Every structure is written in structure tokens, then in C-alpha cells.
Image (spheres, rainbow, N blue to C red):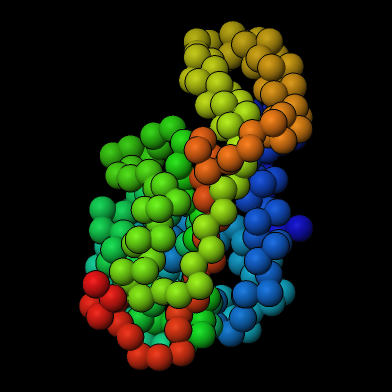
Length: 239
């Protein structure tokens, strides 16, 4: 499985990390050549990607809320200081919602990819506001396909990461976590009281999701794989 620092198994959100890990593993055939991680933050998946790609280049801006470990410091809302057709793969995980100009980033991802190169995205849909004041958008499957088509991508595959029950459990867990306040011993006590709720919900949600016949309606987020065509069409041509 991907090598990253997971939250403890008794935390409020370990399930969403496991879901993302499964998505990353399922897409391992696409990690090749020079892999650019746009919005890399602390580069938690660097070692995992290097099992498949020939090199890893992290890109992020200097105002990241995470500890920065970028190889290239750049604003993803602007043209990137990266040569055209330099990347075999572009990855961007939980980043697109934080960009005021997602169209610019997707256009730049298309530009820096080699013909036939792959773009891998993970984006939220039914998810709480986070990293405020830099949380701008939520994306439906139709919206993602439109943005990627306009950026010039082909063979666009958009899959929900989970269904209604996982989404509901995660919303409940984050809501109750925000209620944990007060002195240290009070916070510890509240966490102990909430722990059965957090654990029970996260263990049950994947099974209950089988009752949800259309995950796209209430998904926590989407996993996206798209391909740059072998031609020379640019984002400005795909209108």
C-alpha cells in the first residue's frame, strides 16, 4: 500500500485515508516517467510513486499550510516554470478545490505532459470547508469532465470514491471532532466518549455503501484519470 503517515486507526478519519490508498494502488500502472505532484505539500506519497515512476518532482506554493517539501515553488493558479512535455504523469491530490483558477492548473498539467501522458486527480464533492480562506470549489462528475475536456484531455474516467454512508459518517465525525473543546483532560475524555461512534461508523460505512445504488449522488469525492492525446491540441483549442 502507499507509504504515507496515516492517522491512528482509532482516529475520526482513518477510513478516508484507506480509500485514497486503494485508489492510488489501483492507478499504479499510470505512474511512469517523470512524475510531477502538483500541490505536493509534505510529499507523503513520494516513496510510493518512485516504485513506479523514474523520478518525482513536487510542486507547491510558498504559502502552503503544510510543511513544504517542494522541489519547485510555484503558484498553481499561474503558468508553471516547467518545460512543455516534461512529465510522464501529473498527480494532484486534494488540491483542485484550493485553487482560485483550476482551469489554469489543468491547462498547465496538459501542457507539461508528454503526448499520451496521464493526469491523476483526487477531488472532494460532499466535504467540509477546510484550509479556509483558500477553499473555493466542490466538483461534480459532470463538472470535472467539462473542465478536463476544455483543458484538452481525453479518455476521462471519473469515479466516486465512496457512497452515501461513508460520506455521512465522515461528516458526522468531523462535526463531532469540532465539538471537542476545553481543558486538556476534558478533550481527552470527550475523545474517549466519541471513539466508539468514530470506530463503529467507519467500520460499518463500506458495508452500508452497498445499499447505495448510485455513489455519484452523494460521494465524498472523485478519483479521476485522464489522458493527454497523441496530437498537438492545446487547452485553448478545446473550447
